Image 1: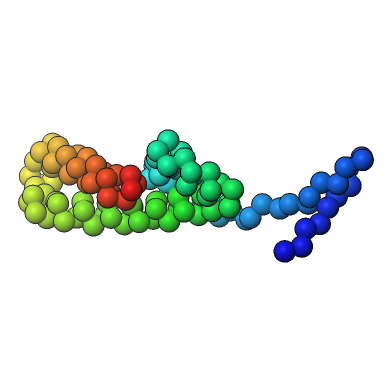
Image 2: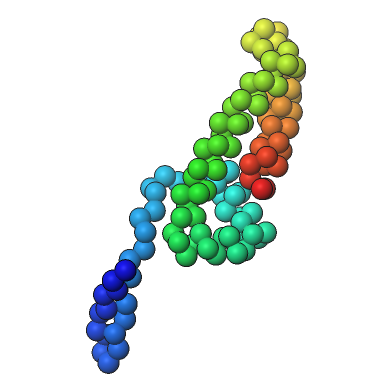
Length: 116
């Protein structure tokens, strides 16, 4: 590896450039993963920040979490009998059940993907 230096007054400073970060924004799951690493896995967090791969990692976890949420919600709704017929028949009951399903699925995704 060859380092280049820039003269600044009487000193030579290494001309370092950071790695390019992905442009995609972090959403709920990516931010949760970043905060989990920052609070509970400080060494891994610091290493990823120094290597410039933290955002890329968080985006990958974010994608996995979103896909898992979709699968879990679909499976749990099917198993619980929450369908379009129920939605047409009793909207409030459908909303209550879907909110419960989403909450349970979020907890599962958090324990399976975010907090490992």
